[in-house]
Image (cartoon, rainbow, N blue to C red):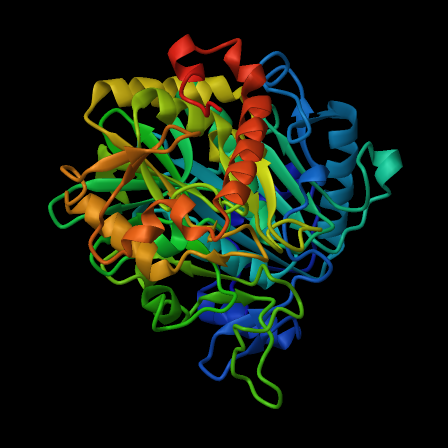
Amino acid sequence: MFTPIASSPASQLSKLGIRHTGIIHFQSPTHQLIRDCLRRREGQCSDTGVLVIRTGSFTGRSPKDRYIVRDSETDGVVNWNDFNQPLDETYFDMIRRKACSYLGLEGELWIRDCQACADPRYALNLRVISETPAVSLFAHNMFLAPDPGEADSFRPEWHILAAPGLQLDGPSCGVRQGNAVIISFARKMILVVGTAYTGEIKKAVFSLLNFILPHKHQVLSMHCSANLGRKGDTAIYFGLSGTGKTTLSTNPLRHLIGDDEHGWAGDRIFNIEGGCYAKCIRLREDSEPQIFQAIHGPALVENVPFLPGSRTLNFDDDSITENTRVSYPLEHIRGAVRPSIGPQPRHLFFLTCDASGVLPPISRLNPAQAMYHFLSGYTAKVAGTETGIKEPKSTFSACFGAPFLPLCPGTYAALLGKKLQEGPVQVWLVNTGWTAGPYREGHRIRLEFTRSMLEAVLAGELDQAEYEEHPIFGLSMPKQCPGVPEDLLNPILTWADSEAYFDQAKNLARQFSRNFEPFAREVAAEIAAGGPHW
């Protein structure tokens, strides 16, 4: 059964330059989208009835193929760099025409109206136009549904054209190769062409809000997850992909606000999205029950193979990619906050996956250290999250989200610094990576221990604990924590060779210092002093 499009959106397609004479599916229910995928042989159902797709040659984001149009809105405002690559308006118009022509020739199109930002003061209306039903299902899962009573009056502020089957001639289009993600603030349009990896859509929307919220509204946009305690206390978890934002914020003892993207406006936190996009490699029900149990109904599983001869998902199989993913609506998490808004946080956790095995599993930061580590954004990129990453690779990503920040990092840091001054917020650095040695020599810190440390913080059990100072990084490390072996809390004690540890720690400290040099000229002396000393 085909769902016809309303007359108003149909006429707007023509205004965009998409002259389509085929079948258009508008706001299709999720069960119809799944049927459409099966009918078109673009996916399969697992034995539990979940749709499973493959995203082709791209199983992760391709940051080198992301562009922002240099125009009157962005020139002199955007921080142009390797992540924010400028594209001339002429090239954008050329690619837009190609995308519109391509979509116009497709036999079927899927259109999804949705919103970003749970705080109605900043809600952004989106219209996603795609050549595949899977993209429409992803948009349903990941963004907020408009109020049913406002469906007739819905007017999209931004359009997203998704044409994964369109391959560009890179050089003649001003881009690197056949695929590209392009954001135009003047045209209020996102083009996603040549790639079927749905995460590109999610992060493109996040990028545009990282421009709009701070620049237009003085709202701090954050690459973080957030949850709410039973006493009304909010906790925020900053971190890049693979550091544990989704896993650690999805806690049966707390209520999930969101797993990846938030805004901090005044005295409230709000989710930018309406769903979760969780990594599911080696997913286990006993260790991550809420995520495991969320994979039902309209959940969309990407690049997870089946067990041989069956339709049973094999979460251990990384033969396609390490970056296997599942998207699902936020309400699939039992007890999730609706609307996904919470009060000002009491605790901020900076999550880092330290592949060097140097940083302690948890440490308390003073305000200067908090600003230093926020600007540093140290972690290790983990396998599969981006094209070409095969094993952990140390990196620094300002504000724990440099690839998605169109403005200078100092803009976001200044907003965070103001928030830290306004309220009693404690900041913690949490290493979810390695201990007892670097990657391949040591071992990854067990999830159960990390959970115990966070629960101790949130319960106030570390408020009066005894602390010791790390001799190089100056971090305050608790000497005891319920449910955690004492020798794990000080990373020096976990290494068999303490001299090797200090060599590794000094090497990491030098990396921190080199990375912070551009910021040191712009921040107060006490913030620069919040880094390592050796």
